[in-house]
Image (cartoon, rainbow, N blue to C red; front, side, top):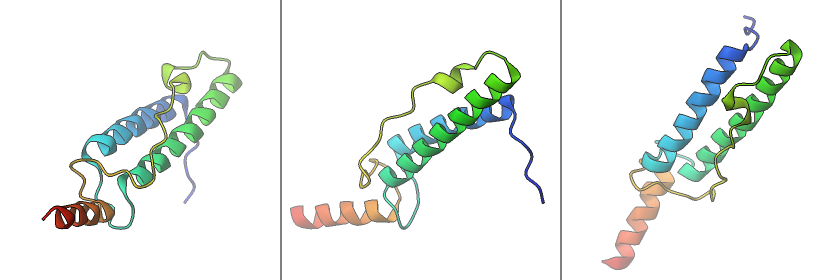
Length: 104
């Protein structure tokens, strides 16, 4: 099955969705049982970089102005072991459990 070629509207929507996903991970975390939220946030950040480059390339080829999403500053890089306060990710649960154990 062939993948559809990316279009300016589809990449714009994807970038917008990736920014929302990064923000969700920052506040509520994820549920990945193997990686902390910071690792997933940095992965999402990388996707944003790649998709923005694709979008700029498409705009240049079509000689159309780039939408805001093409030039929006990507989110900041996070420490790989960052755990959001409400995270359900496996490493974050272990980190909080260890912290509780040390206090008690």
